[in-house]
Length: 207
Image (cartoon, rainbow, N blue to C red; front, side, top):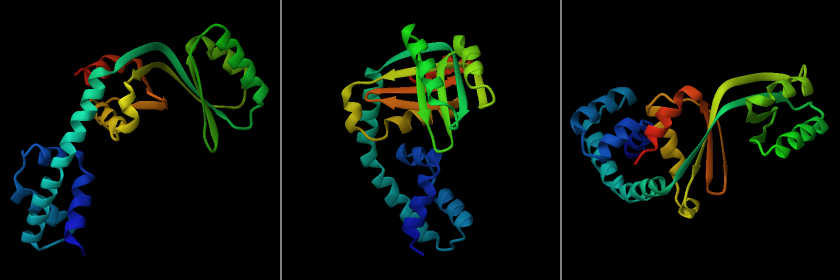
C-alpha cells in the first residue's frame, strides 16, 4: 500500500479536515492516529509525514481559493420565488412540451428543460402547475413545490477557474441547504432550492 496516496485520498474526501490542514488548525499526531485507526495502517511515522507533506501541497490551493472568492465577490445574485420542479416521463409527446414552452415564453416567464436518461425535468413558475398537470396527465413522476431559483451571475473569469461550483455547493452544504436542481449557462449558475432557504443562500454567498 502506498501510504502517502492512501492518506491524501482519505483527507481529500473529508472537507472539514482538509480545510483545517490548509489553515494549520490541526494536531498532526492526533490526525495521524485517527487515520491509522480508520485505514488499518500501523506505521504512525509514515502517516505523520504524509499528512505534513499533504498540508504543504495544499498551500498551492490557497491561490486558487482566492481567485474563487474574488469571482464570487464580483458575482450578482438574482432570486425568483414561487418556482416548481416537475419530473415527467420521457414517453411524453414532445408537441405538448413545445405547446407549454410557447405559452410560457410568450409571457416571458421562467422555463428550464433538462433531459436525463429516464426523465425530463421542468423548472418553471408555479402559475403553470395546472397546465402541466393537464398536458402530462399520467406521466408526471414528481412535483416539487415552494421552490426558488437562485441565479449567480459571475464575471467571465469563471470560465477558466476550476472549483467555483464546488465552493458554492460546499457553502450550501455547510448551512444545510438542499439543492433540488442545478444548471448553468455560460457565466450564469442556477440553483433551485426550497424557498425557506433563500436567506441562508444569501448569507452563504455574502463576501
